[in-house]
Image 1 (cartoon, rainbow, N blue to C red):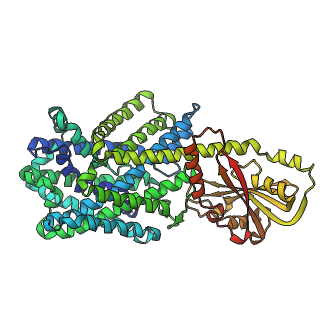
Image 2: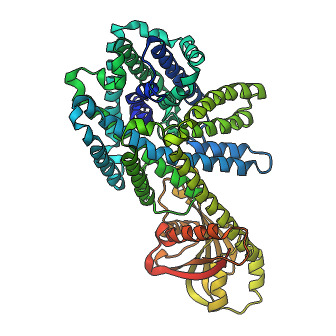
Image 3: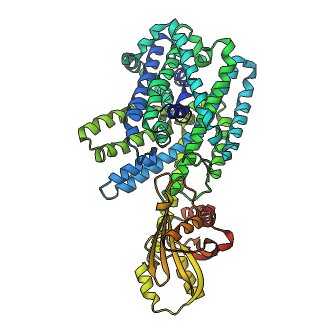
Length: 615
């Protein structure tokens, strides 16, 4: 329990743990200039406290963490549970569509988090040395470039340091806040929800903009569920309730105590809480903590991309596993460099964490609302909750999150448009890919043969059988690969042994060798093989062929000829897709890595058979 709880600190709570750097400050600046009087200080603190308790503690830590999908968490894992419970026609597609929207919003969040977190930490230089303010953006740019440049090496080597560093960070948050609270203990009265409600009802003009800043306190909450498979429910709950939550609240209330007696400190209460001798160490520690928080978000984007590939909703990209233990520790070069470019553009364009605060929050709350909607169906179908109980609990949470989303929408023109634009672009790309693959599947299905049809027709043919083994890949476990038919039609030959192979990725991390390969002899030299991989396994087709020897198919992987179909997709005169969407789909298809690279097939044993397919 203890090692897992400590390890969870760096991965799970890095994002939400850096929110105190800017959240309380932005609540006073995000709505114009909110006066730092006692009523406002108590009201904003109370709002922060109850938002954290409702969204993070109640929804994620106590409820959604229980919704594990074979030990895994995250939006797509929750979607999987909902799909399993779907009984009405068409509901599966609706759940999948919600998953695509949530994934798109997550990418927008993944771009903003490193920018706002690192900028807010480096801005401590302005407090220590105001004359160095012009160096904040260049230093941030250097840190961002360095962070993305080391992604290819993986986080396994430094991951062990994340937990202890973030433990020091949270301890520092708690000590800094406690020092101020001891001097002004009356600030603890803000725990009462009376102050939050009073602030909302008596400050209608500024309440919504302030709520748009308060939501920054719960950014990163979804990581509690997303990293469920890495650490387990109990360690995450223990870390949150017994360490992270108390330290966060001590710091927020400490900032409130400082502003209560020094209203001018609202300009940057986090750094102004620190004594002069500790200011530079605090800047360094905050920078380290924000880098760790950014790393967790980047790794999450890699993991989400891998899951999206498994579900068939995005093209097959180059994947490098940097850890044999964790799904999240992978490297996706294309995603890495696109994220880096977008983060740099955000830093250069907005120039400050206050500017980025306007862009932050919309993607986060959108993802949270999707989680709540999907969780409702899981509670009803799998947990067998009554309709009244499901509606009462999920409706209350949705009401709170909808208020946060409505407040964040006020910032659309001031920067909130960015995550919406990114999300819209990603949704368009993924929907185009799925529609295109659907059209291709229909084209292939129309001309494909079942095993029985193929073997029955084969008796009427006179084809030469040549020595050796020919392996043909197919995505369908009961259909004949088009590459096999293509080879027969043009070369008029068949190998003595023909192996039709389908590779399936399962929702568990690893598949033991005993369960890796399923072999079925079809007769007349034809075999069907199904190879199963876990999401953390490296696909290796020759290695799977060695395992097949234990199931009756004795062959030398080095002597097998691997036949792979390579399609050339061209637009047809009339199609269900518009011309420019077909152009995008063709472009995406061309960016896919080859099956030979993905499945580690020896280059000298590959035979590619081209085909022209119209969509």
